[in-house]
Length: 241
Image (cartoon, rainbow, N blue to C red; front, side, top):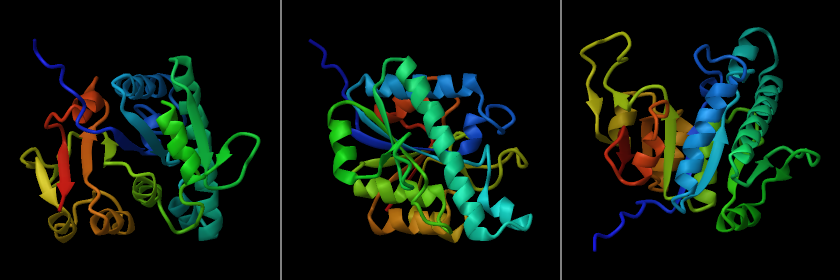
């Protein structure tokens, strides 16, 4: 009797940028893009894998862009954090329509629409089969949602950070500009830092490196790709020690 292949990971953190919720344009919220993401997450959840999601807010508002336009940096960052809550609620709605019980936890208190971030409660939700979405970044200005993803992954004991992008991994140069760009199957944290490959910002990256948290950068727009990653297939680029 052939053994059914088991997922390679039992608890994963999926990092989504706000732009991916915006679909083709990267702005606003595309119902189709959100449905497609929710479908991929449900597919992985049905394998028995516990899924945590951290979402950016760049499709609605980006703190850095705001500060370039004259908004005070900390204020701009708080506005960006609120944008991540909007995205979190949109994804929660799509997941629950597909039958996946979901909880949103916010790093900024807003008790009417989201639970506060409580590590033990988040872990309990996961153990009960719920998808947990962390909104509001870290709750602090000057930190990106990449940093929030690295922080939460370590806090809740995820085995890997899955960084969802529109490209199929990390390249030595921009594949859109350079047709001869080479994709890495595997790269070390140090190599990625030395070559200035934009995997995550340096704070997030250092957190992953210091705590030996592997990162897989993969194309989230290819159907079933998240499932393939979780099952241990060589998809995207693995960043490790």
